Image 1: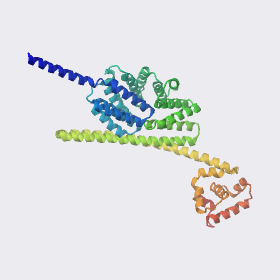
Image 2 (image 1 turned 135 degrees about the horizontal axis):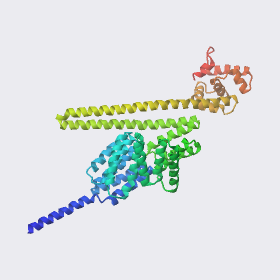
Image 3 (image 1 turned 45 degrees about the vertical axis):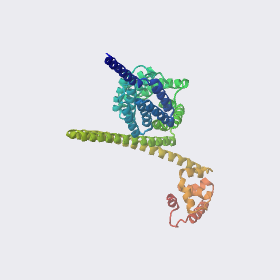
Image 4 (image 1 turned 30 degrees about the vertical axis):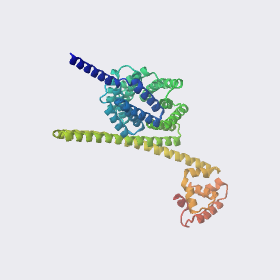
Length: 477
């Protein structure tokens, strides 16, 4: 009897220990998950990159002391998401793998949903939308099984909104609209209305886009809205106004978006290229070639940087798979031929995908390069016409404006002869513009003979050979 009691006591104690260990990690929502995710999201939304990393570092140590492995995984996910939006895809993938090591044994469905949603977020930035949807499906399935909580209530609408974006990019507009509506119905925020407007802009339904865009703007002005969401709302309202030819309002909204893009650039660098492109389109419609050219150039620089990072990450992912396949083949020599075939297929498919993306990017870059060159020529022609008109009017600002058009011309003349006077430099500028002696005489109100004498003196000062045409000489400078 005594042995039976002792055995029963041991079993009871063991049951208590197991129960405590099982519930210890599932009861950290209030003291760990909620404060971490709330603070992280606030810093993320305001672009406070360094503070966000520091916060997750502190919570990572806290999770270690608590023996809370899933807590470490959440920290890895938070930092991975920042690296995805920043465009550092290789580091993001490494951090996601680390998060997986911490969360793969978790029975917490909210944690699983966060993990899958982060992977969907990552693949969307790589423009691999099929994979983004697959991971988003898993995120939604896991979150629906999670018990009701504040964290679930916040995450659910964002998963739907993200899914709406992935389906739109895949061209599945029915699924896209359905998910956007669900997200907006759950969240009813300035941001969710903004994303509805984005959908209607994307599908060229301007009446519906205007309703949601203006509603998002009104809600933003009434309620406290994070910087990054305000950025997206300004961009959307600006884009909408540009589409309906309300250029002044479009310019105002897009400039607000640009200001916030620069402020939050560390964590949301991918937004700024869209703002640059929208401004380029706006100024092109306003026939301001100079500004259109400037912002199109900025867009190309930013888009190129992100594209290079995407392709590097895709290649790294492929290399990682091949490496894993090789490790597996070492363990199973009998299946080596299968691994080899699978690896070959993966390499071929990945290579073809990358090749197609590169070709598409090259075609797009070529098209944008042509547009950039056209705008550049227009800017030059506009400035040339302005300088020519100043010369014809004998305007005192002619030489200053000419220097802007040909910044190196004057400095090279002064290298040949540092003693040249401003009047002589202005005369050289007129010759550079190929005005004839008669035209220069008419515009400067002097006799034709005086212009010929000026040419003679200028030849001596610039050491121009007697048989060399002065116009040809100045063209080479």
